[in-house]
Length: 294
Image (cartoon, rainbow, N blue to C red; front, side, top):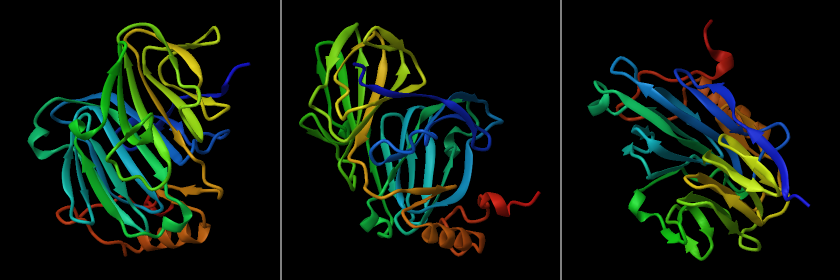
């Protein structure tokens, strides 16, 4: 019997100057473990006249995870952090009771051609930590656990699984694994994962019980373990998930919470521009959608 419960394909979503492939949330599956939002950004080529300028915008109740394959993003936030995100590094920002950040093309690359490609992910916080103080951590690529086994390259982007632990400071039991293959072979993860599991195919493909699945799809497992599947040569996949929360999560724009009242207060606070400002990036901001001028 198949262990695949659901197949989710990328849907185009507009985030301003960029079209991204949105994977979560999905009407039939709002979350996979604590993962509540997953966008595949790019690949998109920017010339010297085009820039990535995602203006200051707020978050509550979640941690954001930015993981680039190509390109570079300058992250700034209300904690005073100004960090350039490069491919392979993990940018982990926990909003808690509220944080504002911007994502822009770094100044030293604004006269160059640039390809942007990566994943942008939201991880919901446990209910008891929804209103924690905001935090920010930047983990360089070489700090992530990475190992090779029989033609497979493994990397643990976040969480703890398979006897490895990422330095990314997560707040609930979860995992995000990158697997790259140099040859076609079988992967058996039976009994090695926990909670809910999803498998995202970035490149190449996998086969499960006679069916082939290709890029830009998430396969959601019926059980915690994804059991066995065949990965094709020259493929890159991500397996992510973890323990689901007992409470429902509500999502409105950039806000996530177990209580709609928390979201309403955040909306009103942002509309009144009462969130803290980003040092050095204070003049512009993204209005809450219903407050935008036509």
